[in-house]
Image (tube, rainbow, N blue to C red; front, side):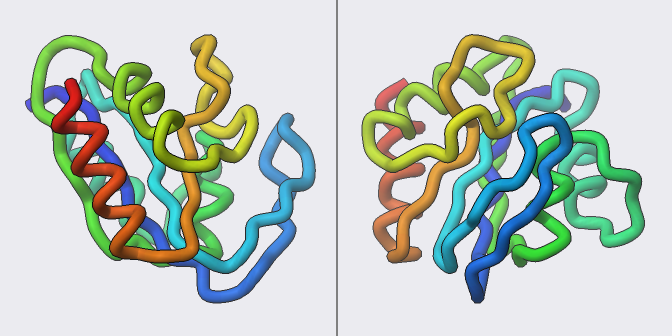
Length: 130
């Protein structure tokens, strides 16, 4: 199955991480929503993100060394929806500039909010607007 996904993450304490070519980024404690696509296989991509033993390849791999995945929202489909979801989330949440979007024109594919319920509601609203 192909599609897009949103990882819901919790970062318990602030941390500064060197994220590949983006350099050092300060992440505050809170809740994050990362939008990705898996046109080669949704379940395989999600399983990779959930594994602890992996080579860092994508920006999210760096953050996942410090944050806990608390939920995964799957968006099955053959067409590329990742950027549309990111645009909808950008209208509702603050983004981390440049994160996860080096292969597109989006300002970010990672969004943050201190409140878990508000972040989850923003994801649901974004998906409902599509």
